[in-house]
Amino acid sequence: MNSVERMFAPEQQTKDRLSNASTWESGTKVWASGEEQILTCARVVDETHDVKSFEFRVGDGTPVRFEPGQFMTVSANVQGQTVQRCYTISSPPTRPYLLSITVKRVPGGTMSNWLHENMKPGSQLRAYGPSGSFTPTAAPGAVKALYLSAGSGVTPLMSMTRASIDLGLDRDIVFVHSARTPADIVFRKELERLVALSPRLRTFFLCEGIGSESDWQGPIGRLSLQQLSEWVPDYAEREVFTCGPAGYMKAAQTLLHEGGHDPAHYHQESFDFSAGAAAAEPAESVAPKNQAASLETFTVKLSRSSKTFTMSATETVLAAAKKAGVAIPSSCSQGICGTCKTKVLEGEVEMKHNGGIRDREIQKGFRLLCCSRPTSDLVLEL
Image (cartoon, rainbow, N blue to C red; front, side):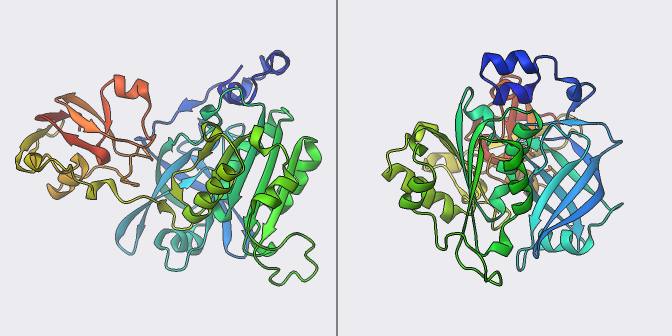
């Protein structure tokens, strides 16, 4: 049984049926979150009037392994400056030869506008490997799922749904998506098609207004507990995955709490997809409250270049490195994306991350520099 099947298939009968269906995974490689690859655009798909999907081949075309719901960090030169953004991989891991990201054009958005205006078949950009913990592994063995999404937050849940359908699992999934208007429903036609393929997949769309679609027959407004109860009477028994703008996720969490849903079975993405960046305050701006710590300084040595710099205990290693002119790949600055993952060869740091690094990586000495502060002198594998 391959890794994706294990995420979705707790039942013994599914295990028996799929135990030999792992040929798609043969030859795939693990693309480390801190490893840079070249992406070559193979196809651009217009999803809505302001949303496009960009499909990429990775490096030399070798298939890539990742978990549904993970994201990758893309990097491009925009007007002479390197810009990095995190985007969910909207394609499923069952299709490992083409990775897609689905991007909404945000007014004033540097990367989203650049992608919409410049990315076409044959174009290239750099990216760091898949990362993130908003995946089905967060709820191993879950039998019934409820997906709640709004706007571009549909993308990780779409990857999960596509993977389940591709594997023929016929999982009990209720997918509730909110959009501004019917014209803004991303993947609307595909979701309708997938419902026909999987009898236990149900979809519901909720729009704030009808826009130009005067014959819209669906509900108008925002998600409420009453509406959710009508569509999904057993929502309290389901594993819930929520993704969308920060305000939407907070409202969804609140109404589920009011409805008696167990918070232990609630999962949400940590990104504000309306902005294309981490929703929380940058970790680099949060300093320890211990006043004495602000007086401490430590020396950081880079093992490969032999460069050294000094830093305060109140700074993150990433922030101090940037001040010292050391180029370290980074993106979210929240301990989420994993882009700045680096091995600490000597010394200790205090790290408070948000899922961008795994326990086994920590045990091997890796740390996320964006959310790590030194407690001694350091030697980094850089």
